View 1: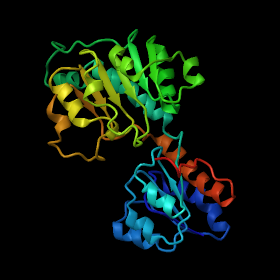
View 2 (view 1 turned 45 degrees about the vertical axis):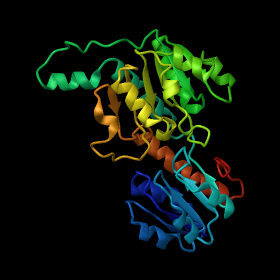
View 3 (view 1 turned 180 degrees about the horizontal axis):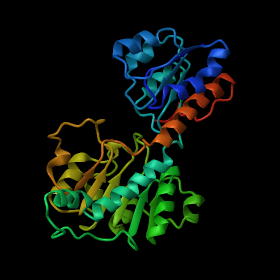
Length: 319
């Protein structure tokens, strides 16, 4: 089979060589990708390809259509909303993700953003560089507050695990409640009550038709004016205009945002940047040295499992 990488996986060449060695020894054709390539190069690679390996960049329909023999897309990301799902179903192309590789770094960043927002870290850092003091910058503690976790899958539960050290009360919402979350002390409630009762709200949902725009002005208006919203999930889950209005009008205290309706880089005049009560990062939650290596292993494991006739991490029907 022809196995092609269309994006780099942010790991050294030696790791790619290690994971792909078996392909080559078994007689498969393998085309590596160690740096970003053009759309035209992707189209060229796609021709006669049986398997794509991608990361989190948009995979447009033109490239999928160009691969007449395509059977599998192994995605180096948890979400697969950047893959044309309907077309893959139509072409009978299996889509597998890399669930679990980014659980730890994403949860760590979620808690980091909570702390940075509540302790005014960004403002304080700027003040320090200007020779100023803490005047007007004294923040609040995370400890003993109520934290609402929206989405209690692997990342939501890891976030809860980290938060237990802060002696917080944990509220949770998920259409699919699970006992593992309850064992961590998460008390399930309605989405509306979670937004009304929490001092911090951390989003950990996949982007689906049912979650797009879920956090709208109605939910945000339920939040305490002292509350902080953190999004390390997917940007379109939150209505950007509703969040910006709430921040600018002081309806909520602040937010920590790592994901947006478009993938960074964002324009410098983006509406999210109009106020000073937002902590922003350019979609780094998933990216650590360790997670990138885990991701690469899972991506290649997906391919090996498919070739062995026992596919894993299948997300073909996820919409």
